[in-house]
Length: 318
Image 1 (cartoon, rainbow, N blue to C red):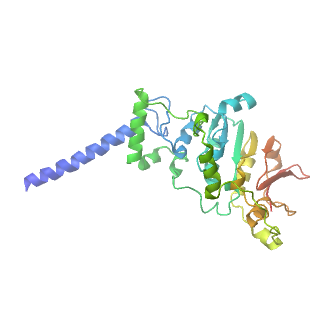
Image 2 (image 1 turned 180 degrees about the vertical axis):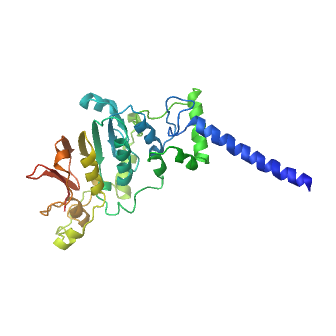
Image 3 (image 1 turned 135 degrees about the horizontal axis):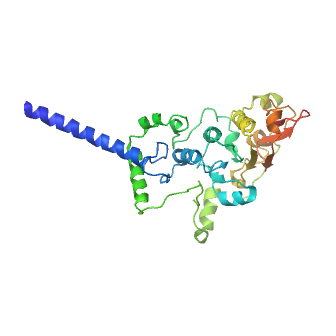
């Protein structure tokens, strides 16, 4: 009986020692840059999931301007924007970034010390999706615990296999065996130009049917006033909140989409996204905040206008 007791104690003690060592290793490596810096003064990104790594870029204090969007905005080069607009940009665009996730990034940026200089929002269909309030995150996961102001509550979420693996990569970077990824958020994720495969791209865009002329729906879908009034754009209040609170310059850039990914002209989907409305918007920014400069590039499911009182207005196209 005594032998079994010693065996159980040895197993439990050994398991506890392993867990303790892994926890200490994670804290020392600080793989997400969200814990107090005990070993490395600078964070090195070694993970491909931007949602877990961008909070450290925001909190670094190195950037007074940011780019936020989905993957279609990831190839906007921060150094080019530095030269064009001044300031110091970080590209915080995420693969398949949803509107709520982008909203959280901007919220975290606005809570940091210092005065934000510029925000470039790469807008696409996610800001117009009617299910944006329900489908806030993707299968990649979104670490809400990294986006609050209490860093110590992050520890309860970090003792897992993925974090241990990323910690090992961080050690490999420190030892010179690996290189850090996207130090300012920017990374070319597309194949090199000399590897461009026209046939592969064509199949990806058009599928098995191949390139074809897109025939408009005739007669075009004509929604009733009741249908227009029922259209929901739950993400636009988040965008309006960003524009209201952001103290610097804002650029809203609608990212271009290939014609095969756009709604068929004349369809109900196209009418929802692009048709005009005479109904005034209930979504507007305050006059005080609207005095700063705002630029809109391209067209999409929202419009901007200026009321007689001088306030800017962000409106869904109906």
